[in-house]
Image (cartoon, rainbow, N blue to C red; front, side, top):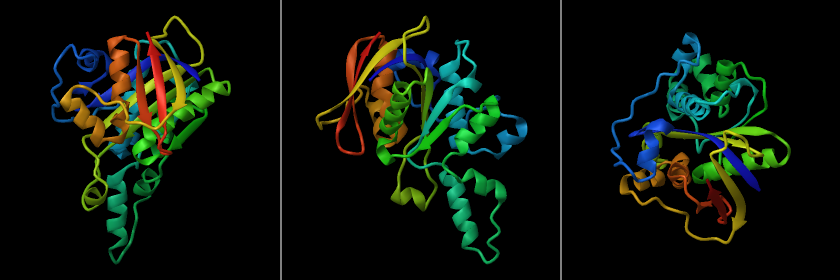
Length: 262
């Protein structure tokens, strides 16, 4: 399958947006994993902004970043949201409440606990009624989301916005499912070349082998500790505006080979 990249978004420790992070990802500037700051998401109405947790903020911020500088109406885009788990803080609070005698679960907490909550808030923020898919593939969630987006484009969608995000869990969930620093990224993908095309991706299934790693030790630590950050080798290739290949492991143990050309 062939895809064309028209926009990129990224958010994580030391990576505050695609434009300011390109030199870092391309290896032209040092990576400093600064303490992560929760982003302000002005796209959401104030009431909804107060209700949302970190995963929603990560997803919407990254999606906005990928669309920055384009004239595309975000409300018309089909979207694919992918995460290895969701909002661990909300799940922790619900479980804690259910362990108490009263068991009065907050309705807000309940509706934020579902896996497609970020997609719902994106729809509210952009006033979108376009199709949206939310999925989970454990450590292979980014690869699963990329395959889903590619499949939709192959089936006739003109453009798909892919958003991957993951955030750490609180204890005791963290002790059994450890996720590193918060991270999110987004790719605006299209089925044909346009004036806004940044790169061409050729995607195919290949033989099982090791996934592509990233040279910088700090970025590699982030990649290996956060499932959404498995996208970093691809983002590095796009940032360098270079041709190359990235291998992503998927849940079947095979490799998704991405061949990129600027």
